Image (cartoon, rainbow, N blue to C red; front, side):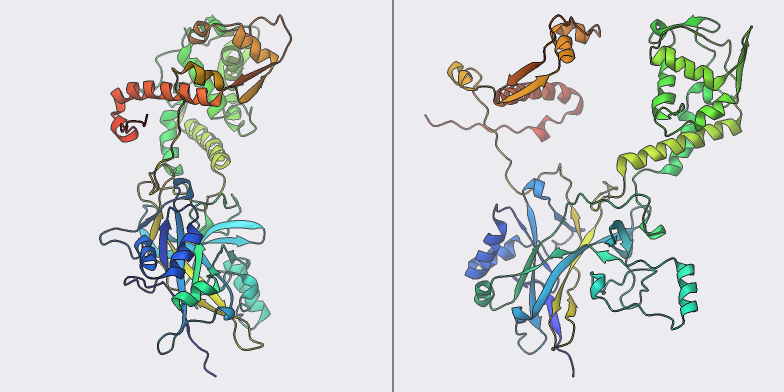
Length: 532
């Protein structure tokens, strides 16, 4: 028996093609609005065609989809038909389930498309991130994912084997242990019966995901193909680090400082920002940026390397190690632990091998910090803002077959390529309006009672009440007098705080405009007379 061929295509409104139709909507109730336009037909149906952005305009490299934060929503619309004369619509009762997947175009390190696709994959409870898709019908489960396979692994046919257990075992050893991947799917819904009857089509619709909080499990990706992409060049970091090290840790050369500040003299915390300010800044870099002394538990290796270097020899105390000297200097000049520190007469000579060791230790700490800050790759992270990532979507339906047979999987063609607009870019919807109170209306201001309260602990209240604004500006603020051991509850009016923020914002915009010349882009004021 020859199985019936099903076609899943776009709505083909106004000359649309076989690819999924993508409609951008700014309606607050965009799904009911689309369904009503479909049900009404005629000019209303034409409005859907007008909101469709597929196919893309001539000359544009890709469609641009806005995010919900820009109050714009992207809806995929498809038509399920039977491949017969006059293309009768597919009976909605035969659709067991439907969905869509968003796939990403692979790029090389320069951001150029390589022609391959990636899918957002999960293996068990772990998000594996973007994994390479193979060639349809030729992929092996332990190597790559078949783009035509069912996204749900429980619905796929068992993977082919070599027919011999030992050969299968050797193949897994060669290519890695087999993992079962599932691809992230967004649901598609069949339009209500009255809508399908009105347009004489079986319409499917679904929201296209363009934002996600999902991140791949850092350090747990599925091999080289799942390596997390980052906008930061770690090789370039290693090349730049020697010049970024404190001067006294660099190899002999013109970059080395001419001498030790306050050489042979004792320094205290009072000298930190005056006589040895540059040295103090370098100490902060070693402590905070490079974790040279293991305060965060990230480093300590750099301290061990520094402590192998003899700095000088103190009479009656023996030789002084460089690492311990720097650690003591941090305590006195950075942490303010008290006491004094004897500065050396000269810095030790640093060899090229020693500098290379410092660089490797610093790089390891910075790379670990980067992993902490960024975690795994976000699903829609755009690590190349100058050449934004491109995506395509593809829809599928599972159609019920003859009794006893599993549902048949039918894929649509890929959509037009699209990019995702960054959150800060202006969308299609009008801007939100915030009505400010009249700052000169005394009666109105009296009615704006505080509507938020902060519970201020005693210590913070003493700092705020015991110091003047001038003390804060000049850096002379202290802990304040703690005469009354009370906590305070301070309430404020959010509308008035908003008004204050608006006034301060306008002042600073004028000041920054002297430098950036950006006022014409971020502030547009249009006068309108108010009705009396």
